Image (tube, rainbow, N blue to C red; front, side, top):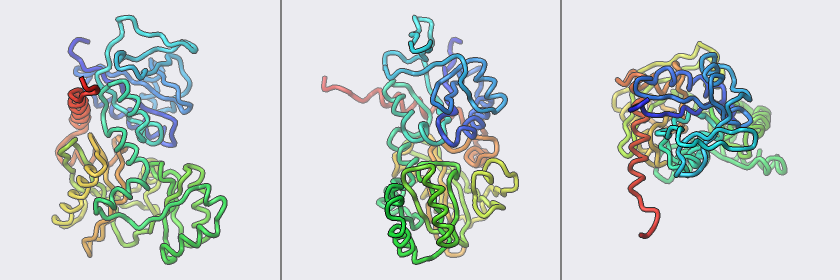
Length: 374
């Protein structure tokens, strides 16, 4: 083990994207050079337990859901103990000199309790390097309402939107419906989303008021806030991968052409009829504009490591609207983030290498910051 980098591959989680996380982690695990890295897979069950061991390796190989298994473990928020701590019943078993220090954590936790800044906060307390965005940018990336408000402040074009709380919907449905139709001037279709979710879970498309009501009810099952956006008819769905810390770069543009009415969960992960065009059929100047906005948005959110930027683009008018920035994008073999970088000259195994290096570089830089006056 001497000389190898100890990597905790953290996946699963209490999220509607649990299964997607397992698929992403499986691909990353296969791509990591075992001669360079000592990879320790740690799975998080849907009830929040952390587990490791042979059962977790089996989950990675089979792609099944992580269940309550033996080998419970965790990371404590103690910067002087940068090791996995085993759990026995209600007791923590602290390693006594034979545990290996964690060099870096690779969180592959799509959605809540992983992509939203919570796991990043734990790792900051434990002073452990990790791949991807920090607490602030992760939280902003997860909350699609807040990130859109930040983008507006930076002059980044976003889709027309309106949001409200679930509690307001429950008590004032008619007032909310009237406000929505006034705001969008009854210009359907509209998209209804739970803004703190991912992989299009809970998203519906409304063509009229009846479908609007139904869509809001669906979204309330997944979040305490509801986001309504203008449907961008006649535009193309363009995605760009961003990589880096303070000086990010953008990949080539890719275009998503779903056979379904929109790019929903089934279209992303189950159906195989979605067309992915890499590179996207865009004029060079329009492609450059999209890529520039992607990097601007990444910096506006104080991003680091990686993100995927999703756009709506009118190829005739050259208008561009940023839909969202995803801070832990899918990493399955068919996911756009790695596919765009592969086309742009960085194959999958080199990409995960680069991401680990970026995470460690950011951690080293942070060690230079004083935490006391003396």
